[in-house]
Length: 64
Image 1: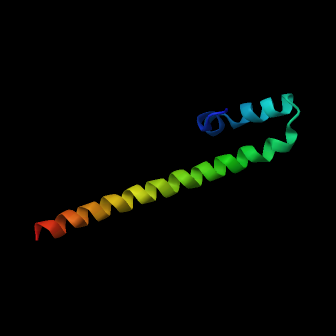
Image 2 (image 1 turned 45 degrees about the horizontal axis):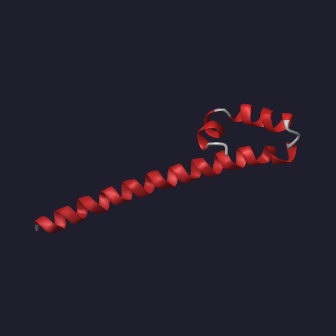
């Protein structure tokens, strides 16, 4: 199985390998996977930031 890091860092290598194997139909998947991974990482970052804010607020409420 191909790791997401390879798709993220070297999408052209992945595309070339797909072409060599005659799997041109899967070429659009590379960009789709990259875009979904970026969206997932952005959402995860937002979730982590919001959790941190919630924890800070909970700590302040506990100190009251």
